[in-house]
Image (tube, rainbow, N blue to C red; front, side, top):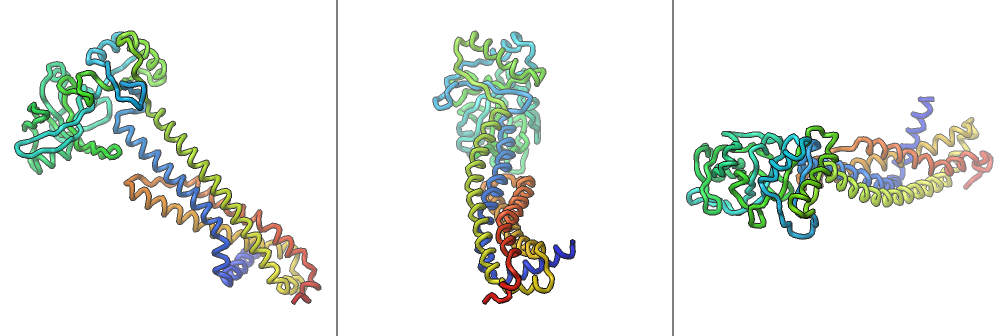
Length: 397
């Protein structure tokens, strides 16, 4: 049986090589369909990984949730949170393990005659390094006492350290932020970028010493860490109730890593469904093309079929021969579609500096589908070839 399949494959391969251009054009529908699905699925998996990494850089892990000012994402936020809310929430909700806080801002910073325009300036609590998974490259982070005492100390990113100080140590030096001098006490470890923002070009200072992006001392967001991750939703509802009573407003919203990922996943699922529909049409067109070409092949090889039957070939032998040929066309088309799909995804992810994540399940599924398309659309031509009368076939001109 294995020998017979091998011989059928050899004959099918020779038949394809005898009509290279026709075979390639027949594969085109299969190639386009498989290419579309593989490219999108691979980019989608890479996008999920990219978004997950970006969310981690934002400090939104699975063990916490973010409470951010502004209920309407299309309107500028009007923050009402204060530094005192941290202690208040922890006293009212014992299920909270800790709260970290961030105030994003920007502005020019200078060192001597050197100036860096509009870097990321973050006002933070003393625990943001510990709670959000960061590390120091040199020096230390500022302390709770320095936050409470409104000390002007700063932790700078590696990009700023390099641009201002080169190979020299920045520790103990003073930089100027919005006209105020800050003592550099540490250099944070590199973290890459969040979209177009270079996170390594950042300065972190005590939250009590810097205003936020909208120009006041209110706090833009809290990262809240429950003691029990399983009770995250429960803690979130308690925080909502407490804060509405405290600030007399519900102008804030919650974000979680899973929630953000769900939004991204839903968008990608919709795109995948759309492209899968296009791919299905391409595969259908490709399958009809295979059937059409195989019917042409049957008509071209009537005498060959008659000779084979006359010397003892059975009905199943003829069916296997033509099925193998149609399946080989589809499999080669599928393989080319997978190759070009992965190549296209690689080039796109390389261009946007994303991570290439190959979805092997999609590769296996594409291979299986291409084989099934070849079998399904090759059955009728194969049965028609096997049904030819050998006497009539031998007399066919």
